[in-house]
Image (cartoon, rainbow, N blue to C red; front, side):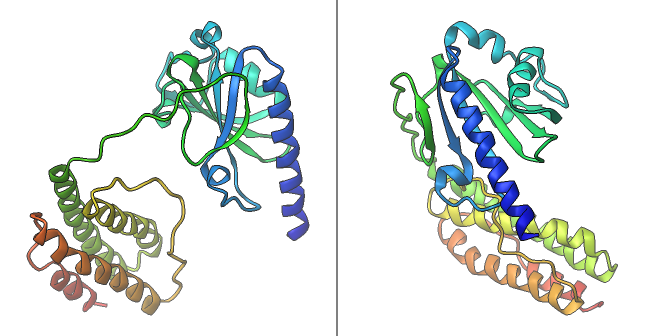
Length: 265
């Protein structure tokens, strides 16, 4: 297994070097950087490549065309670009993932099992991004726009919604355990964890940043599953008084209902 992972990393390094060399030598592209774990400096042996590429305005109408918002396909022009670096086994456009402007295409390469998230950004809207690893730049890019802090009232309203949603799902999780639906239980644990993260950020007047990281595990026994659910409920209960003090609203006695359902185990 270790040998296979080392080979995977070597293949990823070779792929990245090829992409960087080709794009740097191609007049259509002005800059490229890695975001995600590489941008944060937290990459590991299994990290994929979140590649952001600035397309010169003369070519952006073609390469950044969006004839559809999403689908298991891409345009012929983008496919030709991606195919320079291997045979795409899976291609999926999901342009809503590009918050700057332009396109987003997931490409899984057949030869290496590596995937690259290609984000093509028109020069006209491109700017530097925080937490990135610059690969090359042929032009000076604007600084990141300064985003106004989230509105306090909107944060408190968002946090209140997240609390209500948490307890709705937590009650369902308790019933999933009673019904011995372990797969459903584990799938929705991530929702509960994310609700807590959203509430914490909102109470600080911030937006929760996207992450794939989780502190959750696979809980094999019923005792472990109940303990995991109760731990998340404890975390949310600890946040609720802060939300009420800030002017938000919370359900009346949600934990009692969860425990009533758990008592049926």
